[in-house]
Image (cartoon, rainbow, N blue to C red; front, side):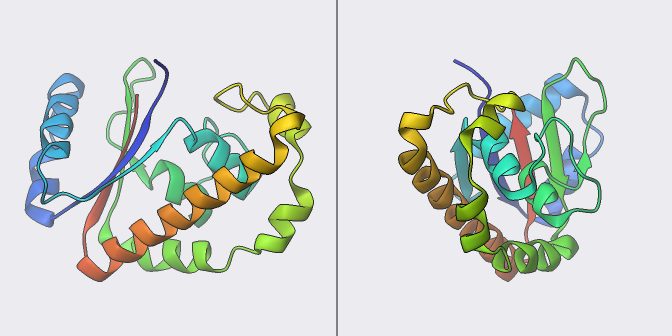
Amino acid sequence: MGLIGQYMMINNQTFKSLVDLENDDLIEMIEDLSEDEKNEIYDIDKLWDGLHFFLTGISACQPIEGNKLSEAIVGVKVFNNDEDADFIAYTMSEYLHEIVTALSNVDIEKLRLNFGLSKFRKAKIYPDIWRDKDKESLFDELMQEYKKILNFYTKALERKAHVIVSIY
């Protein structure tokens, strides 16, 4: 199966109900919320680490505090700092403008010129798919995910929603 990344927009009332939950209860609540059609979801599947590396040059396993591109992928604050727990983080609505701005200002041509799969392999970026023979299709796939996450965060900003990031 593997580690799957999901982003979910939630309102303030729902966010407040999550803040004090323990890890197992938090996961159960997030899974219930993800089935509720009123909570818009963006499912990045297994490309969360690849997109983080694509945008920042660093694995998502090493989030860059204060870097809005990093925070777009892994959230601003982690719910539970237990290293053995599943990864669940959030971004409050007041941080979305800076994230959308950072994503909007990504230099696509620079990404294209610097795109080398050996860098992904050397950094052990998840999942283990970074083969040179697939370079063009992987670049296209990462670009599609970049556009989807930008669109997702733009909608969240417009709706003044908070964003939950879960990777497990």
